[in-house]
Length: 120
Image 1 (cartoon, one colour):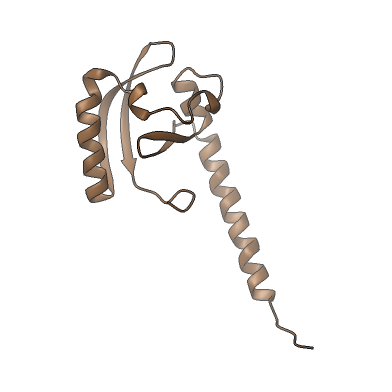
Image 2 (spheres, one colour; image 1 turned 135 degrees about the vertical axis):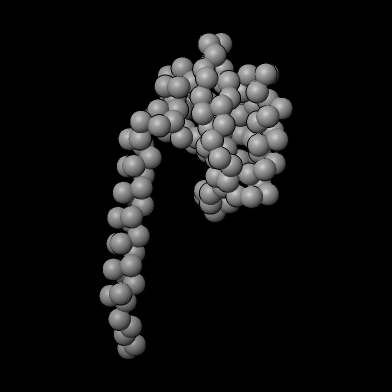
């Protein structure tokens, strides 16, 4: 019989779970809208973002193109900003006009950064 002490591994797993739970809670309860997109498609929205876009739930928005929610007057700037983010990893705050699901315009300041999400 061969025994291997995995106590430290189990401690590390527990600490990682605790850290993930802490950050998930921070994002979910943040009063600031937070969205994640991949290849211009929405893949995550926190509850504040759901409210911002006038949706009933995140499912009303997940899978939609981000560009559907950007006012045409802001679209060129948003696409240029996207290129900047890809090159530099982040972009400082800028004002943009977004469009709620019902068509109402929303004026926001957006700050963006690249993150690893679901391994990508």
